Image (tube, rainbow, N blue to C red; front, side, top):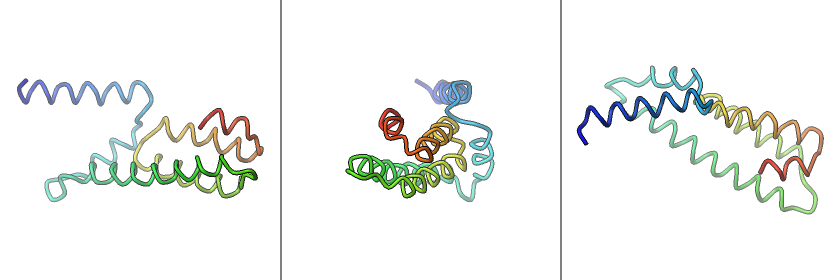
Length: 116
């Protein structure tokens, strides 16, 4: 496969992520900050997002296993995940965080377990 085909596939894949609601315009803004002085900017930011998200999701999973759930702490963690997903344009993650926070607010354990 040549470079032109790979570039075309990347553009098609990125376009499908927008159409399916995984990414939003914020990701385009993030890409616009990348230049020849910092060619790996987007990769670095997205990698940090994944690392932070993995940590937060592990903490949330452990919190759901507790006998007594600390809804306030879970809400704060989901709020953090919502903010970071919003800042990189991870639209679908952001929307799920809003739903999850509503369950935290209502102290709805069943809802939380169904979304985890």
